[in-house]
Image (cartoon, rainbow, N blue to C red; front, side):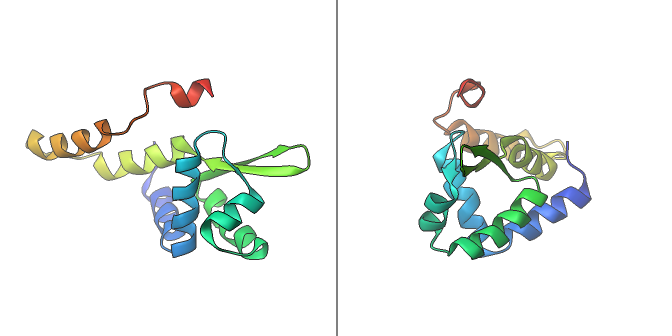
Length: 120
């Protein structure tokens, strides 16, 4: 569970167009992630700019990096992203379940099955 300070860091990191594109590209890529070169190409930034942006996203806990031979692979940090959503929705409804029902319906539209990310 993230706290307000962590949520602010995450929102600050996402408040820049290339960083938001990086996170979205990594969510689309799934747990396998993308190499630095592929990620830079996918979001339209140079390698130098990518390094700057991923540093902020890593610090915010929204992405993760791992070494694969000589390459660095980046992937979405699903616990961090889920924590951010949970932070926003923590006090949802306040006695109005129809409000949360709309959000639950949107999340249910995700084609992923529970546990798939853990199996990859």
